[in-house]
Image 1 (cartoon, rainbow, N blue to C red):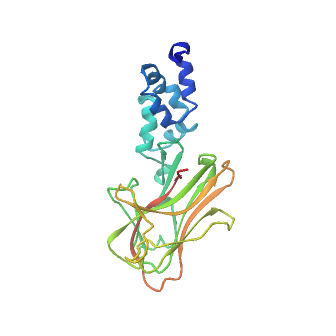
Image 2: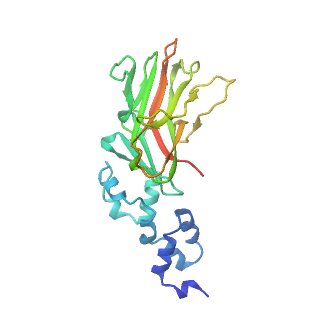
Length: 262
C-alpha cells in the first residue's frame, strides 16, 4: 500500500515531526509528497525548542526572523548563525543534528578575577568574534575564569560538553610551561572532575585543543549531564594559582556549552 495515498499530508507531517531533523531531511528526498510533509512548518516547529520565540524576542537579532522564515529555514539559521542574548553576554544556537540548545558565555559574561585591573586583563574587539568584546591576558601570575549558566535553560536529558574557546596573540608566554586546571560542577558542590589542560603545549606534549574552523581553537573543560534542569547553577572554571612566571597573550572569546555526540 502506498502510504502517500492512504494517509493525508497532515498525518505524514505529524509522523515526521516525531523523528529528528536528520531523518526529516532524508525523508524529504524520497518523493514529492514526503518532501512537502518533511519541509512543512508543522514538522519543523517540533524540532525547534519550545521557548525559541522568547529567546529570539530577548536577543539583539531582528524578531522578524520568526515570521519571515519558514520553520525549517529558521531552524538552520539558528544552527549556523548564533544569536546574541542576555544583553550581549551570551550567544544561543542549535546543534544541527538534534536541535538541542548550545550556549556560549562571552567575555562580558565571564567572572574573571582581576579583570578590573587594566595591567592584568583587557577587553578588546576582534572581527572574528561573535561578541563585541573578547578578554585578553595582558600579564597575570595567577588565573581564575568562570562561566555560570542555569541548568534550567539547557536541553533536558542531554550530556553537555564545556569548551574554552580561545586563541593566542602574536606575542604570548607562560602558558606553554604551566597547565590550567578545569572543573565543571554544580554550584555548592565539589563533585567536578579536575582536568589539567595545556593550552599551549610544547612539541613533545599531546595537543588537546582543536581548530574550530572559525578562527578560534577550543579545548574541552569537562562535561555535565542535564537530567531535568533542576540542578541549579552550572559552573565551568579554569584555575592556575601556582605559576612562578607571568602569563600573557591568551585571548578568550568565551566558554561554550553544547551537546556531546552519542
